[in-house]
Image (cartoon, rainbow, N blue to C red; front, side, top):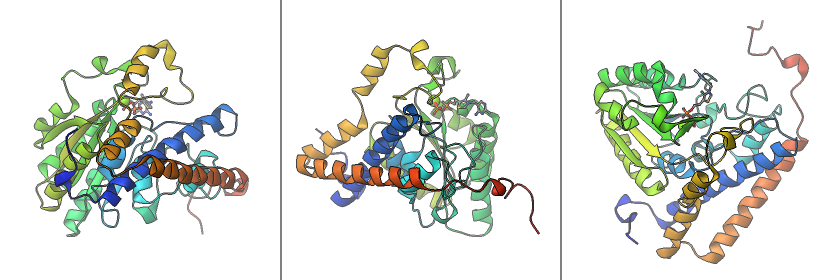
Length: 330
Ligand SMILES: Cc1ncc(C[n+]2csc(CCOP(=O)(O)OP(=O)(O)O)c2C)c(N)n1
Ligand SMILES: [Mg+2]
């Protein structure tokens, strides 16, 4: 096995933190499905299969300075930026204490001011022009900030992506556009989505570098994102990164993927599951041991259990507060 972390400047501790964040994302997501199927929470939209891309990229940013404009699957991004398992569960249960929206929005609509996670909207890709505008404001005010925006490959066909990418290219703004290509947009497979071979091919049209990487390899994603962050901080402008992985679950808890893809295809994709392959990698280099892995999983399961119990027992928002933040108040 080739050493891919040697030149990345990541300590063993950081590599383990990366893996732990990926595993926590997976375990939260798995719990959400159980809660959904037992009728306790209304909706799940999964990160499963995309944890390596999300965590690998987010680790290359500075959560003290930079802003994340995530999309609905980005559990790994928001956890890295400081959102907690408990907060994600509060959102799943739509409770008053949910920091994203006080239980008003569907899960996956992340937003948390203190952690520099910018709230998004349900129409896909609206976060892209927001990220570009925020980067422009940062540049005009002379601030050292990078905006990191993610979206699916289906969403890269929306006008918002093209307009935002062009503006960022013209004005050399510090934006990292990351397309999490999971090969489906609900039931539409990748070959029916794009006229070009790769999403990253679009970058040249907007005057920025475009890179496609293995989205199952957190180190490769970290590396290209770090380079993009360095370029952005030096005033050299935006980058488009495409991470290729696979959506392991149905589109959401309201979708039945058996009607448009084969189980064999899903099983085949799962042989590249980063939760398995990154653990193998860390073990190969003696960074993770079987004992450490068991302890890590136990620690994560107690976090997920506590978060579930807390959120399940937390109060709902007062019905009287439904119009708060909708109309101005005296
Ligand atoms: C503008 C807009 N059109 C359609 C939808 C419905 N919709 C929600 S998610 C989705 C698929 C997006 O696919 P992709 O961008 O590949 O992201 P993925 O879900 O695969 O991560 C669609 C069509 C929407 N939310 N907004
Ligand atoms: Mg997709």
